Image (cartoon, helix red, strand yellow):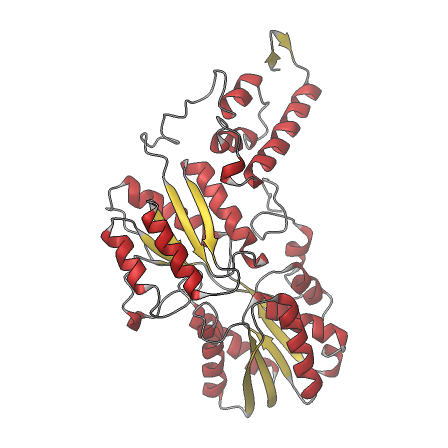
Length: 389
């Protein structure tokens, strides 16, 4: 039983305090860096709030918020690591407001809480390479301690990445990577093997459709986060030798625009045997179009990528055959880990290539995604321990 201001605290009071601290932690975590109250230590607060069911004492709460005694001083290192500077890592993204990257940002924040780092989320809302390059150059000139960037163009990021490395700023790519022939010197890539995931999707298409016209929808053709997928799918279909006519259709970076274009394309091509997509928004658009016209019941197949709630719901209802999980949470978490270790070790622990994987989500295994709301899939902001059954 805990104590508060010299008085015993009942179990109910302890639970009440625990609940309030968890609510406060969630609120603080969602704040922008500029909005965090002076003196409040976000990392310590999150650690206290997630203390595995232990009762929260007032001194611990005060220490987490930057006041009072009883907690680790902010000048000490995190865990058993030595004291380090407050390193700030900048994430340059191509679609900063896209719902796909919600769990990615949770992964960054959670890693910050563990390692005592901070971050900035910046870039472009609509895959504008010039805006991303500008954000990357700003990160370099402002003295970022590490940079993670989605390299969606084969050449445009080469100069800024080299400039950062010359300034002793480590750079990794995440979610999208420059091709090996580009000459980009980023230290490592963290994300899905995009071409091979496309090959796997193509093989799945071949297993579902013996012949006929198939549409492949892509938000921004040429963008290195998704073009390799559609290229892989084309290759697998070609290698199968089946008489499948695969057409690549651009849909645009806006979710509403994607749905409109997919719907219109189907209206003009009702002989389609399949509709597939290589990005989250287009996949949701395919699923919604499949439902609107009852296409699954007509023997038309569909599938795509990522875990938007509507996509998962329509898989469960039988309107879409599959979607592919590439674990976006890890694409935020792992870059922070690798940049932290690089800085901690003076560069001796160089970032390493990390494949965040591929899992086909179908009606057979979609239920856990629908019934468990977590930060790891972006369906909840709550910090929680999800027990396996």
